[in-house]
Amino acid sequence: MGGQAGVQAADSLRSGGFPGSITIVADEATLPYQRPPLSKDYLVPTGHLAALPLRPASFYTDHGIDLLTGVAASTIDRHAQTVTLADGTSLPYDYLLMATGSRNRSLSCPGADLAGIHSLKTITDAERLQRALSAAEDVVVIGAGFIGLEFASAAKAYGCEVTVLEFASRPMSRALSPVMSDWFSVAHERNGVRLRLNEGLSHFERDNNGHVCAAHSMTGARYTADLVVVGVGVIPNDEVAAQAGLETNNGILVDEALRTSDPRIFAIGDCASFPNSLTGSRIRLESVQNAAAHGRHAAQVILHAADNYEETPWFWSTQGSLRLPMAGIQAAGDTATVIGNPETAKFSVLCHRVGRLVAVESVNAAGDHIAARKLLTAGLGPSPEEAQAPGFSLKAHAQQASLDPA
Ligand SMILES: Cc1cc2nc3c(=O)[nH]c(=O)nc-3n(C[C@H](O)[C@H](O)[C@H](O)COP(=O)(O)OP(=O)(O)OC[C@H]3O[C@@H](n4cnc5c(N)ncnc54)[C@H](O)[C@@H]3O)c2cc1C
Image (cartoon, rainbow, N blue to C red; front, side, top):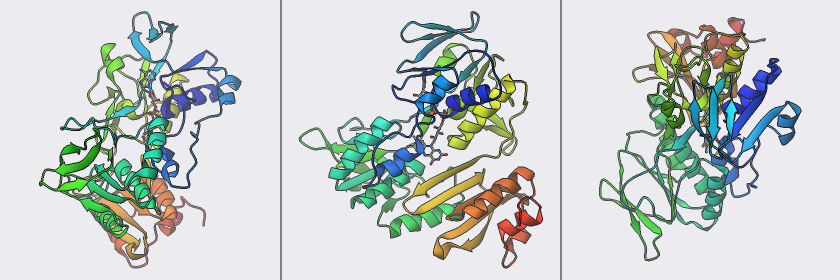
């Protein structure tokens, strides 16, 4: 399927010497494009809108890859090894890669379908939002996750009043350590964003034209809104796989080699739930790195060049002037050591579990992030005691561990 993971898999199959035919089925009508800029560069007041393609159109023809856009894969016949598309076309396969991504979770509260309430997933959503931002005054964001806070930062740049409602006690709480989460709370408040934590949404209010005019929270507060963005997480697109009898549970279940319960079918990217040795459990990740690495890996398994998937996950978010790259996976109960200077917005949080480095979150500290990825992959992270020593440098630690040239 035609997103980050699917296109990468096709690319890696060809560059790895796969001789057979490759077809990408993409339900969006455009050339497959990058999603991260949709909540960042596309939305800045000076931004210009053009989808950033994952590969130029010539890539597909030059590499003998058939790209079918604007048509969905509807059903899989595993016995016959065919995929039927919404237009009735039937495609045979030796290997099938499910790379169907995820869709935004929607709200079901009263008023959730009013005009002026948006979500953000596609280039069409981003175009609509950029137009809406130019005219908006009071913006309410539901959910203080990455997309919600990236959008909140963009809305501030337009001079809007911005309120973010979040029922958890801290922003980005699923992905970030409490230390980093709290630091971002302060940073957004300083930027003029009203961050309302422990405050879930109750319902939306409509004006006389059927447009949203306010969001009401569970605490009884009313927030004026002429534009609302809902960023409350995603749901994996696993229905086509489930209908074909593949095992699913919050995503398509795959083994260590990213194979589904049918060895001829792989699942990669946002839609795949895979076993992870870092957490000792299944995870589903929503990131470019995960999608691209899955795509590369599944291609190598098909080419008999790889076995188990063992990549260190990493992710980034950009919120206004703050760049937040993260490596590894933190969890509740990890200890946190801060290195660098949070006051100057250039620092990292090192998360340890039972003395072992498991994740590093950085703000405007690209060097720390690069070193962290190498150290996490090699399992050579500093101990908490080493990290707490005065003047400790992650980059220097990686150099001493011979992972980084001096
Ligand atoms: C606004 C936004 C900002 C983001 N920012 C970041 C970021 O800063 N950093 C980061 O690491 N990640 C970011 N992400 C996440 C990242 O883009 C995704 O994790 C990544 O695109 C997942 O790749 P994928 O191939 O699994 O899914 P996608 O790239 O979403 O591709 C899946 C494609 O399959 C199509 N499809 C689904 N079902 C079918 C079907 N039955 N037939 C045919 N086609 C189908 C979908 O429409 C979609 O086009 C962001 C995502 C969004 C939406």
